[in-house]
Length: 304
Image (cartoon, rainbow, N blue to C red; front, side, top):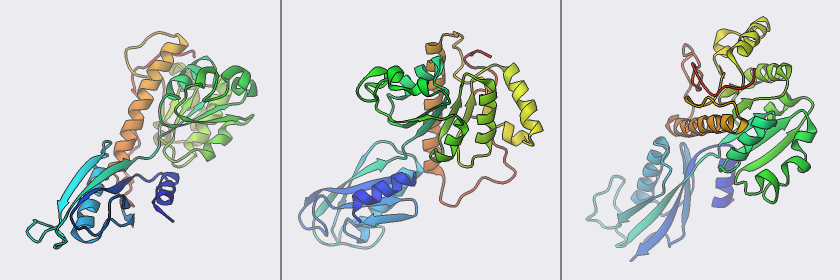
């Protein structure tokens, strides 16, 4: 396994990391330029030279992870017996500059229902570097004749996101395949379908936020059904409706999509910061109640 494999495995397991590269060497040093090391919260792969050099780079990399630092940094260390060090003396006589590059977890978003609003929302989010899953029980809504070929034609011709299309007569089945932390947005053409997806999402471990398009009266009907199905108030509190940022009142699909997309991007950034701060093995206290990440009192209106 080399550093590329290490990064790929960390991305697959949705573990944030920092790639440390020896960018420049002056004089003598333990490793030549180009040497790489991958650092994550409780492990590392590779080496940039051992000793104080490597320990200092590892410490700074983990500080970057804890702070959810998004920008790369340069770190320069002198290898001299006169240098002030924290992890022992390296007196090779040279100077090493290292580039520390964050390797973030790729955010994941799933849209259930690719109707008018869903398609507009998908078009906006597809311009972001995310994993975007589009799910609809109507195969024609995800047919090439309607959405083209991502990266080539249609509304996703200039997509940056990794797009996955999931036409399925049982859309809630797609929940099991979503990456951990995925933000789920439910906006199908059928309220019965919406309810089935919401109930299944609440029973799927590891998801991020759950947002439902619609009115408060719709949610009132849903909560009655979900309580009858045995779901408690803590579970219901995970669902947010209406969804979107405050202040946009238009019911045009494109306007609703802009509002929802803005909030989704806020959630993605908040989740990234939380991944950085969280330590391996940490858990939320049992007494803590999950809170909805969406605005509770208002949001973009949508058809009930």
